[in-house]
Image (cartoon, rainbow, N blue to C red):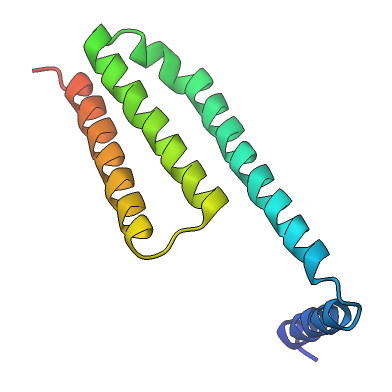
Length: 118
């Protein structure tokens, strides 16, 4: 038996056990906790990356550029948190995509503008 088929059989068995024991509520609760934990882990990794690399470089930028960059990052974090906690669809999903795209554009443009030596 290939590992793929074996893993699918294990997942099917777990699904049957969850449905047979009526544990959907526990599964939804665990899913919500994992969403929050995943968001926290992403935040911690981003903080460590900023602490090790970004802080020294951004400290040399003008105040206005640093403020714009940090505001774009903060809005992106709020936007991603909103997506992960609420779960979006329709117009809300469109708003999420537009806000995320604008934040990424502003952050990259500010970063590239500060790295040019002209």
